[in-house]
Amino acid sequence: MQVLAAEFIKGFIRMADDGYRQGWHERNGGNLSYRIKPEEVDAIKQNFSTENPFVRIGVKAENLAGEYFLVTRSGNFFRNIAAAPQENLGIVEVDQQGEGYRVVWGLENGGVPTSEFPSHFLNHSVKKAATNGAYRVIYHAHPPSIIALTYLLPLTDKDFSRLLWTMATECPLVFPDGVGVLPWMVPGSKEIALATSELMEKYDVAIWAHHGMFCAGPNFDLTFGLMHTVEKAADIYLRVMSCGQGLRQTLSTENLREIAAAFHIKLREEFLD
Ligand code: 2HA
Ligand code: ZN
Image (cartoon, rainbow, N blue to C red; front, top):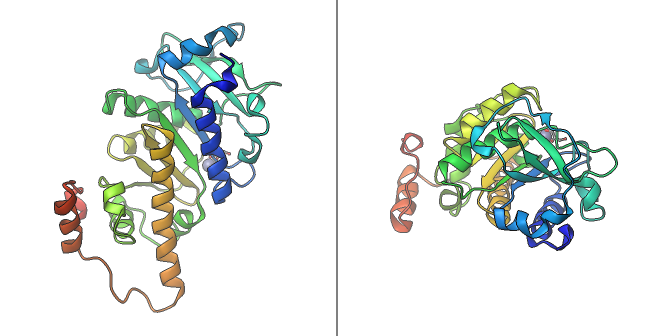
């Protein structure tokens, strides 16, 4: 099978395009990666090249040894992915130590994986272990309303989780664990990669102050839907506050507990007092 005929490539491109249309990917903002299933690798492997040398990632994850990832290109514009996927996307193979990768397909004309590959890589490692291999997608975007909120709220997991849960009744159902928040840090660094992957031990969402958001999930729909739901909650808050009279009423802690009971979900208790 041709690489571009594979369903996972089509799904990846559609998600990237959807993100662009939402306004979350100005210029070269954002990046996306997918841990490819073994049977998906087998179906397209005859197109792979093994000529490129392995390159150090800068971080290590033994549980990702031998895995293949589909990733966006460093510096690429999301709006160009659908028009030229073989230039703007690449498939990389991880070495047997879990600390290097080589490009086996795509990234044509000298491309390298996203500058946030260390963060993606460690997040994949944490999520693969925590979900018994179920999670495969890591998505980073620059959604404006959640970024705006990082100028207004205290930068704590609890402040963000509580507020976002109460901005639409569906929110506690979509992210019952809440969201993690990082203070401002230098993007692309090993430090931000390690700090983000620590948050991913507890949450599917990590918010980077004054920068954007990372989401993790088992497939494209659920990961995109998570980003979309969190961003919409932030947007609702900003719309309400822009009316200039604050919150006249909102969901109470008791209401949140009622939602949890009715839908048999467990909300993170430490955010419920
Ligand atoms: O340009 O979003 O965080 C890619 C980024 C860096
Ligand atoms: Zn970014």
